[in-house]
Image (cartoon, rainbow, N blue to C red; front, side):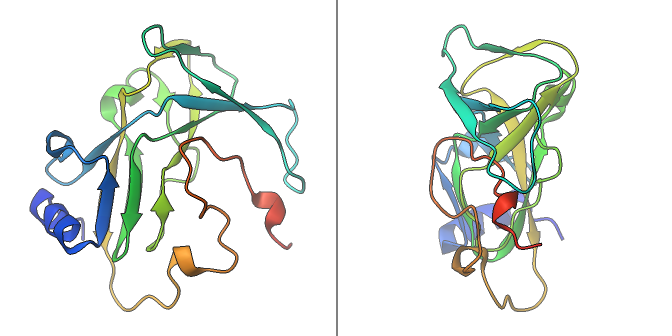
Length: 179
């Protein structure tokens, strides 16, 4: 079941959902709009290796001029909003207006976990060059109710790789997995 605007607001008041900064005008019928943060990153190497730490270069986008994303490049972005979800499963989806510009905001990581507390790293790719700006609406969070008790919240997992609060994009930590 997807939470409605009234349910999202009630969960914020209970402390089960945290959105910082929170803007009431961003609350939709059954979602909350999030915005592109000021930092983007690209990987240093042309070939990425799932078994090693692939380093990134982080840069700040100019606020007024924005930045032109190019096809064939994976950009890591970040949401302006820091979020917490203590009783629901958050899903991040691109806004239709963003999709209509040919921008994908996540390759596979659209689902958060109960207990995820951080900004969202975006895996951005484009079909043609497009200029983006810090603060532009980029996606929407949808919250799903959870049935049953949670044994281990994400922010309490010993092996959780994305728990350090940041306002910058975070590179893949696949290399920390044992396989």
